[in-house]
Image (cartoon, rainbow, N blue to C red; front, side, top):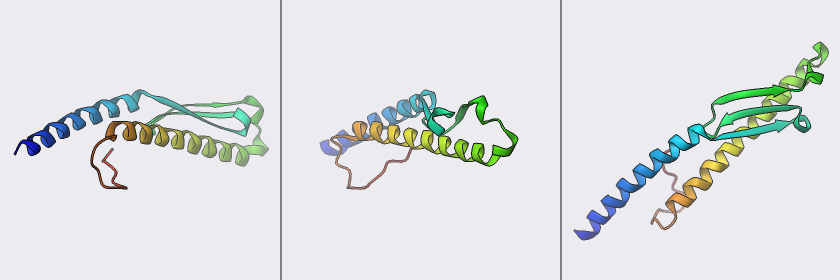
Length: 107
């Protein structure tokens, strides 16, 4: 019975840590770039877009498709950085827990 109580306590601690980490990731900003930094997108680590910066040299009517592609690429870069950050935080948080290989906690 003692092991069950210890497991329950660890589960509660983990839940509190997860909530804290989720709040932190909503405030943590990541930046993605494309076109050698001509387009920059800022997202929260959770994926909410907070800003975009476009170099004025890209604002030409005949280059709209290029600009659109650069925006998508910069957004994807920022999203991947956010995902990696969350993965790193989760690995650090779950270190030492007896979780089956490949199990991902809900986040």
